[in-house]
Amino acid sequence: MGLVKMKDLLNQASEQNRAVGAFSVGNLEMVKGAVKAAEEMNTPIILQIAEVRLPHSPLSLMGPMMVEAARNAKVEIAVHLDHGKTIGVLKQALDYGFTSVMMDGSTLPFEENIKKTLEAARLAGEYGATVEAELGLVGGSEDGSTDEGIRCTNPEDAKLFCEKTGVDALAVAIGNAHGNYPVAPRLAFDVLKAIDEKTDVPLVLHGGTGITPEDFRKAVGLGIRKINIATASFDSLTREAEKYLKAEGKHDYFGLNEAMVRGVYENVKQHIRIFNCAEPLTFS
Image (cartoon, rainbow, N blue to C red; front, side, top):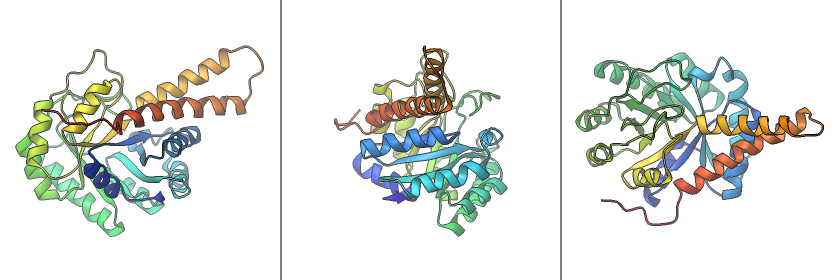
């Protein structure tokens, strides 16, 4: 058990027709809550942090904590840099012991995205780490500061992109978006099916918050092997903290700490149940 490569977890998920939950963290409480849920459910997970979150959660602090939490866990855990934008930050994460990095060139022209991804792949290869990339435009951004719109991934482009870059995982856009959805998303399952048929790499679903359990399970049945959850965990932590502080009686840091851990723990456990449903996941 302990720290593992993300590629190994995704390959296991492919063999078992399920998805691995990738849970974004921003502080000690989020790390503790996610690991506690994974251990209780006896299910591998991915701990991740996006480059855009680093001003609030410095990699120099979060990185060692995430890696040590994974190393000491009772289940297999991969540690991943999500939505990396710069080679320098990718290298810093790899130096801390991250077993996976993502180069997000989704807003770049196709050939430039390939070029940046190849650069990241060469770097990650020096560390034996997994590489994720993104093609198409997933709505919004990790911190909600920008929105380039949504553009579904072209299945033919996905095939060519994977062949040219050799990535281990590909994040796709099928109508999904980061953050809270203003209305229920309508995922393009026909596009996902076509991408899955034309590529042979594990597919990744970003913007998981707000997608129904049924749609999650259908996506898993059509090739999604990693599902990112960020906003739901941040929101759950905040709600539990607010509930604790509004309750009558004495309040202190230790009670607040436990409330925040509990919020993330409950959210992660709920999503693990969905992504690893024992029921058959066969869809037409």
